[in-house]
Every structure is written in structure tokens, then in C-alpha cells.
Length: 348
Image (cartoon, rainbow, N blue to C red):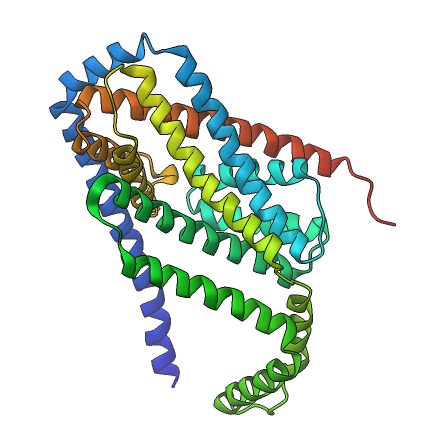
């Protein structure tokens, strides 16, 4: 057994080194690809920079307002989820949390993990139990993913690609199961207690532990989750704000296109290109999806019939607003929140 443990111990660092090397190779490959694209597309870049020198101001103002609305929608979505669990916090605090957590997520290596921890820490600080905080974070992620899928389906339909009924039905079933599951946890106390006892007993049997071990800890988690009653009102409001979060961001991109060109642009095609870019952004090799989201957006806009220089100029302007402006604001808020917490009086 000692020999086997030694082999397992050696395999762990070797596997870790292999994954790190694979990640380094992937990053290097992406950088090489960017360098090749830069050289190959330099003429288009020159034209794009020329368009960026003389953008129209009105669409830029609307784009900035839309991006502010994006953060407001996300903050209000989380606020409704927290209120459904009996935790009421001001919109201002939720906005500050949304900006700061988003900045951590898209600028730091492994940012989503830092962002989740930051969200969890501050939700508990707002008065949520650990289980409710984790529930709110998980459900907000689920709602955001479903909302993006719905926006993508609508974009495909309005762009003339037909309505994907199977996808919409699947999303509807998933949403119903989530809501039913949440309400079952909240109201089906007796059934949940029997299911919990059976699950804990079966798990402990596999571990060769007493059947009731850790049962009290799991029941305490159930009691905390039982405080989260997702009422229809809060559920619908959270879903609407999840949709607005994506729609307003797509409007920001559309306004950036309008800022650099007067040519007619099909909003449905722009929406579809936007959804493709956001789907590509789920690849978290590089913080903020830099290069990955941009390339996907440019390709999508070019496929929609927009000239390459115009697409590049629009995406650069969009990223300046949605990434530079929002992230800069988020880090300032993060510093202010950190300073405020440092000056809070300690509990007696």
C-alpha cells in the first residue's frame, strides 16, 4: 500500500504539471494566432482605426447607458433572488457587489472562482445564510445561462433561421424542473427529510460509517435552504432582469455599430453575432475572453454583411465600453468597498 501511495503521490504532481503545460501551449497557440491575424488583417485595422477617429456621439451615449443598464439588471436579478429568501438589501449595495464581482471575474486568472467567493462572502455579510448565499449564486448563473439561450433562439428566429422548437421546449422543461425542485425543497419537508435520511444512510454505508453520521449537518443545510421561497413574483422578475442583462448588452454592441457607420444593419443578425460571441466567451483561457470574444464578434458581424473594417471598429468600441469602462468602474468600487469594510466598527 505504501508503494501504491507513493505512485499516486507522484502521479498527482505529474498530472498537475501536464495540465499546466497544456494550458501554456493553448495560450501560446492563441497568441500566435492573434499575431498572424494582426499581420494578415493590418489593412483592415488601419481602416477601422480611421473610423474610430470620427464616431457619432449619440450612439456612444446610448451604448454607455445600455451598459449601465446591463449591470443594473444583473444586480436587480440577484436582489430579487435574495429577497425571495427573506434578505432585503438596497439596490446600491447590490450594484456595488455586481460591479466589483464582475471586475474580479473578467480580469484575474481564475477570475470566476474569485468572483464566486467574493459574491458569497458579501451575501453572507448582507445577512444571508451560507446555504442561501450559495443558492442565490447558483440560481443566478442558471437563469443567466437560460436567458442567453432564449435570446439566441429568438435571434435565430428573427434572423430567418427558423425557430428551434426542440431547444425552446428543452429550456422550458429545465426551467420548470428548477422551479418545481426549489418549491419541493421549500415545502416538501417530510418527503425531503425521508429522502435526505436515505441518501445520507446510503452514502455512509459506502464509506462504512454509522448511518446517521453528518445527518444533522445536512438537515441544517436543508433548514437554511427552506428559507428560500422563490415566489412567482420574484421568480418572474429575476427572469426578466436576466433577459434584460443580455438584451441591453446586445443593444450596446448595436449602438457601437451605429456609431461607426451609417449603412443599414439588420438588428437580428447583430443579435445572432452577439450571442455567438458570448458563447465563445465561456472559454476562460484568457481573462475577459480577450481576443476570443472579439474574434467571434467580428466574424459574426462580417457574416451578417458588415464590412470588416466597420466590424473591427464597432467591436473595439464595444469592448472599450463593456470591458474598459465597466471594469474600471468595478475596480474603483472594489477599492471603495474594501476601504469601507476596513473602517467598519468591529462587532462587540
